[in-house]
Amino acid sequence: MKKIGLLAYQDMQSLDLIGPLDVFGMANTSTSGKPPYQLHVIGLDANPVHAENGLIVTPNCTLDDAPALDSLLIPGGIGSRITATDARLLDWLRDRATTTRRVVSVCTGIYVLAATGLLDGRQVTTHWRYAADVARRYPALDIQPDQLFLRDGRFATSGGLTAGMDLALALVEEDLGAVTALAVARELVMYIKRPGNQAQFSAPLAAQSQGRGRMADLLKWLLDHLAETLSVERMAESVAMSPRNFRRVFAITFGTTPARFVERLRLEQACLQLTTGHAPVERIASAVGFNSVDAFRRAFRSRYDATPGEYRQRFGQ
Image (cartoon, rainbow, N blue to C red; front, side, top):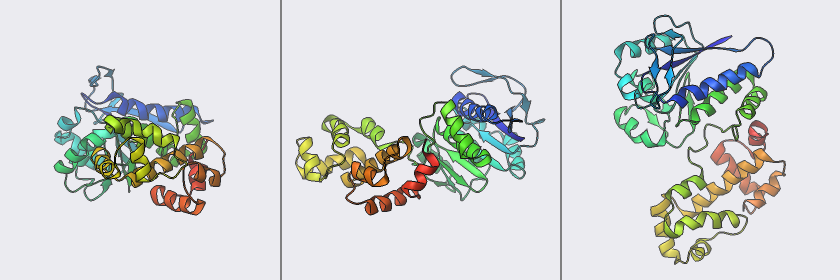
């Protein structure tokens, strides 16, 4: 039985703790025989902890009496910056890291873990909104802000909130296999087992949150015409703009070129088709607008570091 510790502190984000806790807890009910995990909520002391949304959590052990752990998770929250200055906690984390197989931060829990110096020189991620501030405070970190979660040796970091559940699910898969991880995802009604190198924002969500004016209507048009040739001229025509003005406004709005945005959109739609259906790869490549299956496979491997077939085998239903 693997002992999983989840740190609890004042003004933490409750979902950062409860989400991973439920993933490991569901794994305990999704396997036959003895539960694979023993779960410990660890407080800085024995007092109840108030999460930032008002939820009260009572730790079942403290820094002083926590057992030896297989894995340790540190949630984020508005209290993480204050907690990151607690010298007693930082010393405890440095000591525990020498005997703990996996040390994980969820969302802004990275403020706490980074303050120990244990992440210096490592690739890490965090919630997109705080990536620049983390990079400024901890310049020795190699911040990758567009990742859902990252592993670097014994340490793992994740983006915001629900990304902590994706990371916990990846840890379950590492421990118990893909079949159990998929069973947990289904029980928790998680849409898909998202890989760590998936962006925190999908292309449609980015377009919806960033689009203004004519650009706000562009996404639906692109999705409706994804299988067709999407030149700059044709996209510009769809929003009644000149190609030159369209390129300028597109770059200002989305921070990338139309061609790169369209390729990302096509690949994300391909991922959905690979994981939710059984259509042949060749048909999917055509449906999302690639001229050849070879070009599709090259672009897919470049973005996801896997072939379409490998991606379907790992993440498909």
